[in-house]
Length: 260
Image (tube, rainbow, N blue to C red; front, side, top):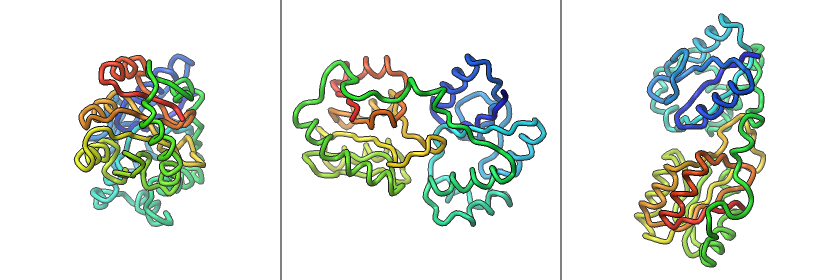
């Protein structure tokens, strides 16, 4: 089997590549100029979907996986660089939500003969477990905030606004939108000071081929920066990168990590 990995930023594409190679699968990596961290077999500018199609047709590759972070705001800041196929996909999208755009992209490429397998068989061991993930539980106050904010976070994720909210004392302090997780957390620190709790969830009907929520050591670094004390993750729906390192950082920074 041979497949194409279209890689965004972050470590998730790197983990997928390693796991796929371990299973004996040949992976052709396509990076996006200025975004992808992973060394790639070919780099294609953002918005050149037609070029991607031609490249894969030439290579005889029909299976494609999209992984990694592509900031939503990039669509609006790169409109002038979109090629004909990308503009067609954008025009077909009923709205400009991330899930809608990617779903429309997948549907358009599927109509051209491409397939998009679920990447979970390669990444299942990264999904956050239920219960305590760090070596200690959240405080009673933090747990109350987590349980209170969790259904709100799921609703916001399902509306495709953002995957992260920050709460404190049963009040929503900030909601992630186009600015991304890190800036949403930083804004919460500016607004509410120390003691904030971060909650990250997936959409209720999460398509694991599209923009699966992911956390890693950088998430804990920014929570530490605002003096937050807990990170709640939706169990079985959020990818947890570098777990061992995260557990050590959680211990060091006194940030509880818990799967709901």
